[in-house]
Length: 294
Image 1: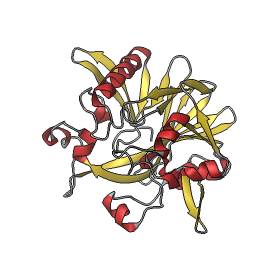
Image 2: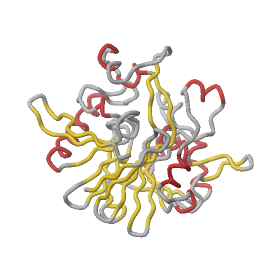
Image 3: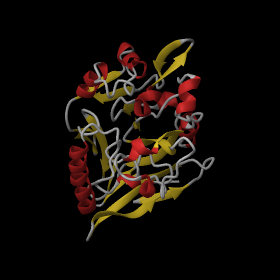
């Protein structure tokens, strides 16, 4: 594995090499969510040590995409919050201006060159940047890309339950279908050579995680199964998770496999750390080496 360093405006940017693919950490925006919601039943006295809250109890969050370049493709995994927000919600979520286009260009890629976008799921902080307003109309942000999402998640997003209704905003994904740029995946599969989709159902229905491997080393984009490095301990689950006990079991299986097979876990929402590997210890699976891909 090869890691290089390059800092851009104090925001996460950089790359590592996995087989034929260069893996870039590309920050889309910064935003903030309620710390209690992010850590569920974990007491604030514990989580605020690593994730300090502001006067409104919000903690800083990253919307960090993964860019995969190789084998003739330029693949983006998730798209962040986007910039379509009204001032009320921009203030509520403390949404920054976008870094996405600048950071893509720093990687030598323009939005027009993105060939594929894999959406882990359609919550607004993952799919918000999939579309944009152009001349008053909603259009795909990446005009030449094919977007991929699990069909079951799309159907779930079109008829969300009362608890998730505010997280599934149709302006983020319906235009993709209207522009014939959305393709559905069904189940776990190798979507491109050495790029695998893995299913998770406990945070929301049919979330797809992305693993890139060369047979020896893997990078796993953890989505909202393990959104930050602070969520590695099994009981540290979000209040947003639909099924807390089930997500603990999903985490256990992924972490054990990651420890045994030497995976690097890529964190979508950690404001301080891009990625880390894990090892087995007496108290369970614990964080080992932190990777700053910058």
